[in-house]
Length: 384
Image 1: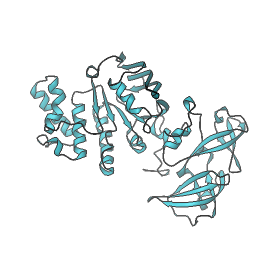
Image 2: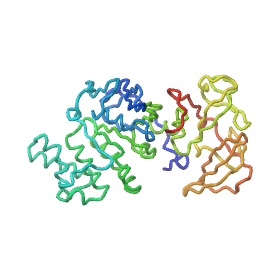
Image 3: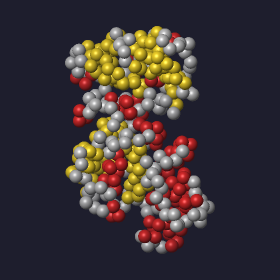
């Protein structure tokens, strides 16, 4: 992904205005399997018509939470409300939800048309209405004229389109998507990301999406909930999560984010004075209330770190030694060991005339330095 602010940067953040039309509410939902906690008093709301994504590594609880919403798992504690009604004890088939899985789960003995029509046939709708709805959905997912084909003879991307059309056919209140693109190759996956976003916008259906892929989440979502061991550590618009992670865990989860330790020297007029690699500077925030002389976590996006001539005149100049330069295609990542021994990466669209082992100066603007909070629940902040 490339943006106006440099390689890997998203568009400028737009403020998220809270909505009030909740279609889904999770209230202090907890779930445990033996000693593994997959949901830890999780509370959040999803708005009607929103593309909402649960993002996290394996074991973060995201798929379990989706299954709790679907009714395939029951929470040990807490409530699940859909359209204001507590459905915690309601079976899946009475929740009017659609679901799309990673491995398509289409019916191999049926044509494309019969697959899509399945949920409508179960509801015993008139044949004419079913044919009309199936034709509408096949057009929506780009499969017009393919209704008579055997579904299992289609490509992976086409089979996933069939699964999507089938899930949308009964007009569900919520469409739940559990890693639906992870089995596809990269080119098809990127195309499907764009298509899913367009389909969600056209239908106005609320999408509840699960993925471990940060780019997928950033590309499609209206809001993202980042999960770690069943706890929502940050829930916000993609641009804000990308540019201003709340904790070390969130910062480390997104590629290209440097997470470092700085020494807190005290507060000054709504800002905090820090020392990093022997240099002192002011950063916005209060350092989480850290006492002078204690360590504070900070995050700096790699594309916000200048190196070489571009670092001259920056508000914060950090001395270090180049460890290696890694060619990434559109940009080069310069891995640098700072004077205090910490590692940092500067990402640049141009090649700098430095070689491994040479001293370098890095430049950062203070507004690009994000002060991090402690992990909710006292975790280490290391991805599971």
